[in-house]
Image: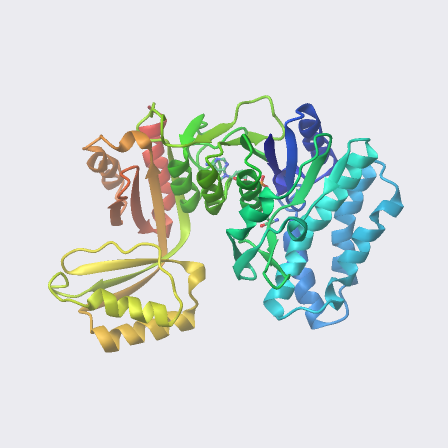
Length: 453
Ligand SMILES: Nc1ncnc2c1ncn2[C@@H]1O[C@H](COP(=O)(O)OP(=O)(O)O)[C@@H](O)[C@H]1O
Ligand SMILES: N[C@@H](CC(=O)OP(=O)(O)O)C(=O)O
């Protein structure tokens, strides 16, 4: 049995949905289908999830939100019309959409989560109706029906392990497909909470693990995962096969094609993941597999870049001798509920790297003031335009001189390296630069090490 997920880019129009449905019908093993909300139809379009965010704010400010609600409904109506679905089939979808502002929510965050989740919820309802209309027996199931329980914050939730116990109890009928909305779960108190953006990939992986699928197929709008972002490198080489850990590191640093958290359930359940193109399903795509039994054919598998970082540089002479410096630093972060990403250090200095969305200007000032008062560093600098480039490959493990040879062409191009860190797993090297240099780092390493390999 396969769990299949279609991203928003694969469900943006009636024509796209039709391609997705053909893929489903083509293979009886594709039994559990996770769907995202309709995505962008062209570069200037707006994803339904973003329209729902606007709707949530507009309906808080005034009663004048009909235009945005109608604009959202129109997205579903256009898809329904493509399949000649009778209009009455849409009445429930319209009602649910229009009543969102009137419902009770515990607070504004839960309210926002419920609005956002309806992008996938209504799409799953619609696609179920379309398939049944075509004579394909299909059942709509959602998190509350199967016990997909989440905890954490309402717009950045995490799956609760109880979910897997609940999923084991669900019976899948032989002659029936399941359509399941991605991106959200249900809290222990039965409220909707969403994963972080792009989180339908996570739902697919949870169901693949929970139903013990043979394969998790993730359909998107590119032929494969490429060895570099196709928006930066022209026609980058596709990756045919890679390990879970390689994918984790690449998606963390910027391969937006697959959510980095989505691999964890797949790893835990040892479910292989196949990323494929809805527009070319005959192509093999990229297969993501366990490390055991994997033989690396290339030194570097891929290179990813993330611009959305900031760093705090601290110099304190004899840092290596002074006990408690790092502990006090951690206590300050902990007091303000700030998590950090990396903390490379030397004898006299350390850099703490943050995701920018973990902080705001006020918090940065408060934290820097506390550090100055309690740790009295010899130098402290906040670097707001920090970028991380991650060079990843299982084949890097035994290449002792790789680090030096990676840096040489960057130096020749006058790119200033702020930090370099080889991961303990030895399959990644992280290069910290100023944001303006990030694309040049990716292009230089791609040209010298991937294009040639
Ligand atoms: N290394 C990469 N390989 C493939 N696609 C990438 C890569 N890095 C970024 N992308 C982008 O990710 C997009 C697919 O992700 P996304 O839009 O979230 O898909 P979906 O809507 O199917 O979830 C591609 O269209 C591409 O622009
Ligand atoms: N619709 C949600 C969740 C998601 O996964 O979407 P997509 O499959 O289009 O990346 C979002 O836009 O974040």
